[in-house]
Amino acid sequence: MSLWEYANPVKFLNLSTRALPWVSALSVICLIVGLIWGFFFTPDDYRMGSTVKIIYIHVPAALMAINSWFMMLVASLIWLIRRHHVSALAAKAAAPVGLVMTLIALITGAIWGQPMWGTWWAWDPRLTSFLILFQFYIGYLALWKSIENPDSAADLTSILCIVGSVFAVLSRYAVNFWNQGLHQGASLSLDKEKNVADVFYQPLLLSIAGFVFLFLTLVLIGTRSEIRIRRASVIAARKLLL
Amino acid sequence: MRIVLLRDLKLAMRVGGGFGLAIMFFLILVVLVPFGIGPDAALLSAISPGILWIGALLACLLSLDRIFSLDYEDGTLDHLAIAPLPLESVVLAKATAHWLTTGLPLGLISPLLGLMLGLPIEGYLWLVLSLVLGTPALSVIGTFGAALTLGLKRGGLLLSVLVLPLYGPTLIFGAEVARRGSAGIELQTPLLMLLGLSFGVMAILPFASAAVLRINLR
Image (tube, rainbow over all chains, first blue to last red; front, top):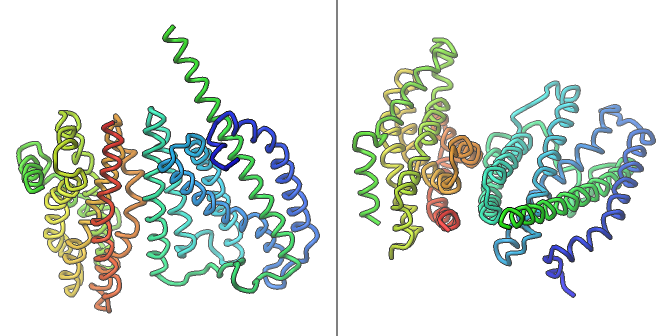
């Protein structure tokens, strides 16, 4: 019994059939509880008023935007090194989810920034690097779409993902070069003490968990449908031959 | 490696090779900017380093799909791939040829265009230096993009979508050097970063480009 067993599409499908109801139920529960708790049962911030509540969408979405690229990077490496098809398809399935998460983070940020900073958009390092991440997602998806041979497409997008990761990090530090900008420091971090008061912190953690499970659900569904599309095209090709 | 380089240079210089087109494009683009922004000398002078850098970047981008496509179509690339010369060196030679026919002439002609945009006098040296030192990175990154989109019909737009985000850091540091140079402030840090970036991609990216080429030639 090892993790690599699930490189077998049949085993992966069996496992995901069993896991999917649990993961999706967890995501729905966490999101409903976390968001309702956050939106209706926490006090307004003394400076930001009720606009603070967008944190329950903005922070988890931003977190997942970065982590889904990271997951794509790991999946691409697994594909390149061990040639597990499920891994390549999981990377493909994660890309649109990550793209939407990036968009959510950018849009909720703009909605929050308008009343708070007085502007929808600023060329601040964090904002700019998210815009760059958005471009990388678009390029990655465009490359998947435009190559017909599925194996070459998986290879080429994997290499693009690796090179893109290096350049995404470079861009992150390059834009730091301008100035600190408007965006506040990290709201959450593992090593430092937390910067968010407990009342906001607990529902935030719940909604982050909800977003993580939502991401897992969507990636599982996406990977399953990619596997099935692959099977259907094989069957279609076989019929054409006969 | 030298033979590949010389061959590419010769092909680029000949009629229909596209040498000079990038420079003409650069010239026209820079001339178009005042048409769009208006002839305000102070404004143009302030944004001229950025305009020249973006112009150079777009001129580079325009000529990228020529790097491999002709060799791919007539089968030369297959021969180069099985030649004793490592494919990584071929890639580097082709990137160098691309730089010698676009980046370097663009850098050398940029003072003329800087003059038209009213670039401050202190800025010329740094503008040329930043372009000459930064455009190799553009060529090498562009070679990677050209290798990625090699087998595709109508890959031109996709090439831009893939390559432009990768150009971000180079543009930021290069334009920063030119801007600080024209403002007469300390520019050692961005200059070193630009140099590091150029040499870094030269050292590492040819491996990725060669891997991509092998996949595409499979």
